[in-house]
Length: 314
Image (cartoon, rainbow, N blue to C red; front, side):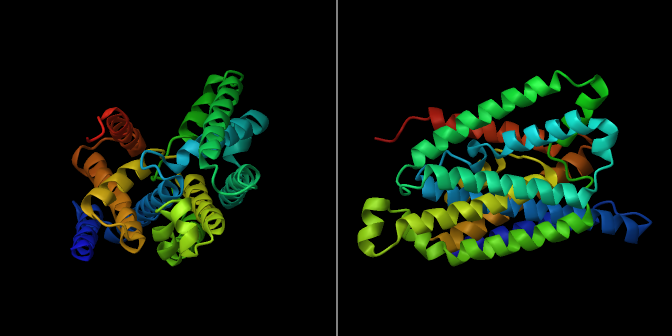
């Protein structure tokens, strides 16, 4: 049943992708198809990466209400963008080589995440709660520092920061997308290779270790995969904090299974479908030019509040 539903999810993504590419297609067809294909690839890659990372993170944290963004990826990204504009100015920031900036941001985000994981979990993987709380505090600190720095910018530079810190798929560089796709595909393959161990890790440390699982090693490997997936997608298009919560919640609802071999591709497909279908409706049907991430964050925030406030079943 779950495998069949996964197939249906794949067909839904195929339909959404076809509509996105071919709807109201006019001359020059080759040029427009190239632009749309680049944007479609970015939507699919980022959606799949965030969906996969969220399922892995929730399994490790044993909490379906958490997302990797709670560790502070988005806050660090905003802090980096603000710092660059403050130091280089608007003209200097705009003249930075796109590929070098993407590579540097990816390395910084991954290094910061791995440093946080290794420092806080050096005594073992049982203290995930301390990791989450530290990530929340660091995120608040970085947002505060970024807000303070933004007050020092003139209006034109502040506008540049605002544009750089919202997720956008309209100006994705093809070379950056190529490098990001390779990293994200390898990370997804690593997550799939870890799926059976994640099935056991989901039982909890006390149950997993007697079954022969090296729980600490699985947690560190899972967090490293999460860091690569989220850092690369964030450096490519910007932060989308609540997309993962939407994709993961829908994956658990549509695929009532504990097997990560199905949940991981399910969340990846759903995450990609949300972005592709949302961008199609937002851009093609409604003709709006705002950023899709605003709508995704709004819907994800509502879902988070629902999960927090709903009464537990007796």
